Length: 241
Image (cartoon, rainbow, N blue to C red; front, side):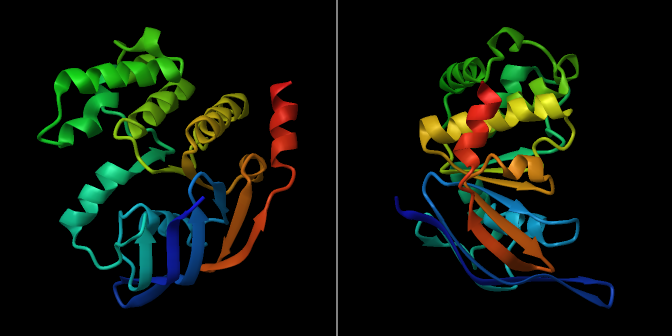
């Protein structure tokens, strides 16, 4: 397995009026293709900022970021938007579905940003993804007609529509009850195994990190620890029994 993400001494500094906030203070991290890792830390630790940098939603103040072999640290906003749409899938805590369009149209949406995209091909692919996440029968429903777990499954299908090389999930179970949250984690795990999908789950919940093969803990904008999780496979087996 080759390396797909490399952060080299990445920093991010914000200014709130005259207050300087060092959200990320020199983070170096390497992630290989097909890894399933969690980034964990309390509120304000810098974990969401790190996810935004990895997802090309923000640019670092200093340091370098290599994504799939390309240095994206200094790219302009337009080029970062192209990389986001082609290489990265996002799953958010609040689902971020458009309420006025149905499920299949929500899944298709990222594919339609490409002016060369075929509407029919995008719809066929969206339907296949909905079947894969167990929601084909709900394809014509509006988001407000779905449960929270179903909406998150739609969001996961949408994140996969452009065949991303990385899936980033920011507190994907934060708005769900524990049983539904576990189902979402199992779905993410199955995608990681079946597609060799590289996944990073940002969470504050230790019950989620148990199901990832590597746990990176963030504190005060720095990596506090980065460890393999030897119990990950055993825990998945216990849940599935």
